[in-house]
Amino acid sequence: MEEEVHSGSDNIVTDFATYEQFLDSQITSMDLFYLEDEELARQLVELGYRGSGEVLKREEFEARKAAAEASRLSKRSQQKTLASSGKELKDPFLQALAQREEANRSGKMTTIIFIRDKNARGQEISGYIDYAHRMKTEDFEPYFAGRKRLLPRPSDLSFYNWETQTSTSNPTPNYQVIAENASGLLFKNKRDRKIINVDPKAPSPGDNSTRTVIESNKYTQVVIYDHITRRKT
Image 1 (spheres, helix red, strand yellow):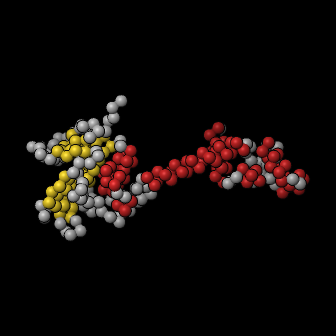
Image 2 (cartoon, one colour):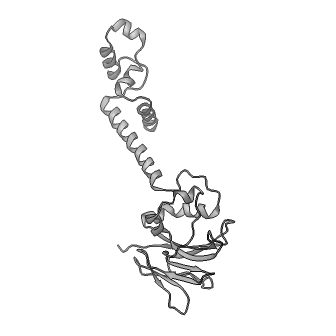
Image 3 (tube, helix red, strand yellow):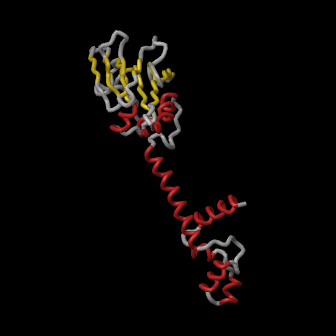
């Protein structure tokens, strides 16, 4: 019963901009005819002597009004923070990025994205992208909206141009690159110091890490490495 009352009150505070409007909604023309005083009619409604609707004190109305506004602003803020929010995503790669966006922004997860495809010049390129770092340095809304394609850059964790033989590697706030290694390219997470092995032949990418192959007709190859960061308590 209490939940029903709260639900009705929530509707009231969204339907009426002010407490006076709420009171006026329960005053009939007959009330005004007999009372001949609008303010008195409002007071009787507030006290529960007139009106057929729910009795709601001014303090409770204002409190619920503030709570409803805070909830609205919170949802609006979240939509602004998440670039994927409200987007209709059909590509499996974009869907995978959207599923990981909040966790990477909050630091619960640090995802490494391997992409192999062709650049605007038709040259085959490949590289590893620190998803969380790229989101902090770039607006991802155009990617989720389909106006841009996410591709590796020379400034990312690792980059290779197969035509020009250009190769680069760079540390990020989340990862250190270990290039000179017999097992191939490795990435060390700077928070928990765990190693992520991106060798597809490795039985596992490492502790607290998973490897997911994404099939997308927009890219030649996409592999996602998710690393769950365990904070020390």
